[in-house]
Image 1 (cartoon, helix red, strand yellow):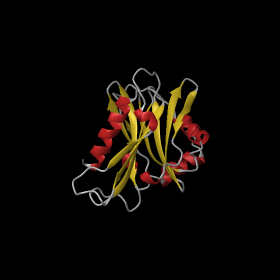
Image 2: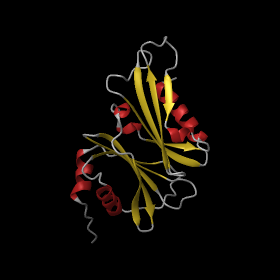
Image 3: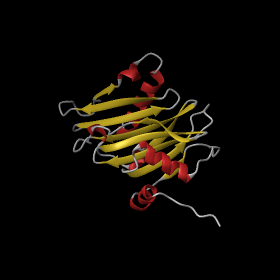
Length: 198
């Protein structure tokens, strides 16, 4: 008889937070064990945070699975990307605590999107009391691309001084405007406009 053993950290995450596990591929993901995921969560430093969402996906051309984890703590929302290597799950990227642009959000805001021949991770939110569109608002979005192992950011601000129906200012991180990253800037622009209904 096989007995499954979970660490207290992963059990607590399973019991006390709404955990959502989904797949964003055709079902051909190489598998991983819960023990590997539990170990990676503890080793990544997010084991003390509340885990709100876990999504699995695959960057085409990579043999292993990627796992996007959305967690939260007093310092705000955190996005961590794990990669399934032969030796187990390893951290590929960590956002750290995301700034105020993302404060008002939910587990549903963590998404996997198809961008041509690759899949990217997106997470978005808005600043407290500034989630409006036509009456002023501050909105943030991060897009992580495993293909280039970079995170790209967009910051949208709509001031009260703007005429109704106009588009506010949309700024991008410097790497999004770098030569060779045009597709990620365009993807961020589309994603922000879609989220804001613009």
